[in-house]
Amino acid sequence: MTAPAPSRLSRLLAMVPYFLAHPGTSADEAAADLGVTPKEVMADLNQLWMCGLPGYTPGDLIDLDFSEESIQVTFSAGIDRPLRLTPTEASVLLVALRALIDMRGVLDPGAARRAIAKVERAVGSARDAGDPSGPMEAGESSHAGESAENVDVSASVAAVRDAVRGSHAVWIRYYSASRDAVSERIVDPVRIVAVDGNSYLEGWCRQSAGIRLFRLDRIDEARVLDEPAAVPDEPDPEATLALFNADPQLPTALITIDPSVAWVMDYYLIEPLDDVAATATDTPIRARMTYGSEDWLTRFVLGFGGRIRLMNAPGAAAEVTRRAAAALAAYDGPTG
View 1 (cartoon, helix red, strand yellow):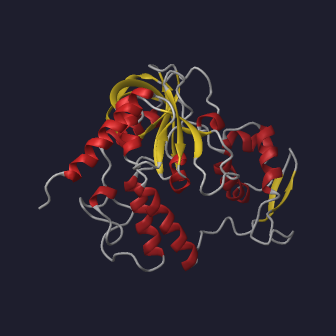
View 2 (view 1 turned 180 degrees about the horizontal axis):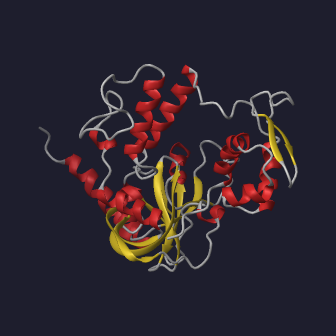
């Protein structure tokens, strides 16, 4: 398998030490060493010329003397020196790494914990024993109070991450909250994305014949297939992250939402029909909701105790009324 080309950021970070070690090298020679074209080298040099330390005045920016025949770094802005974090910077980095560990599937938690241990050691708060770059013992945590649930990564999430990394198709058994059902699918993975505190597998679902997002914590089982991923078209990030675009095959219902629970529109397949910002605080919001089954819709509406009401879907509305009446009747029985 051909190794993936380095990202532009990786190239930019490597270029200053490279040209410091090879002063006067040409764009052609640098391109051969860095695995890019001479045109890309010159474009990267023009980008580097505008990079530097905070303040970003001419005295803080990386300075270069370059042409296609000769390239030389005249001021590195410190990029050739090892990074030294201040305590505040280290704290921010540690908080971010621990948050990523809690978001299952976004990254390898073992690698994140090793990075945390290294940062803690660098700022003088790490454990004295052991090499932080080595593997941790079973049950060991990088900081006090981290639960085993956060440290653990299920086999299904690990399989999904392997499929994404290796660009292989993956078979999954998936629980769909909108349909309230479990289905088996074959997905050609694109990437893992984090949205609103949850991690999702984005990929081409062969069953639905379209790009879909699958919450990692709803994947009950996953198995990497011995076939390459085959996504028909390059997905549009804006389109796929217009998260939860409704499946046109799913039914919809008209509902009214009490403003006190308007937050529900951020978590379900709900499209407001009114201008929410312009709606009075005591006026119900009209919306259209996509759902998978009437039984799920019934339970959903009942869970909000009258603050969400059905304007159509007569079958589900009748069942909501029946179950609500039965629940109220239970209070009419003899008391203890």
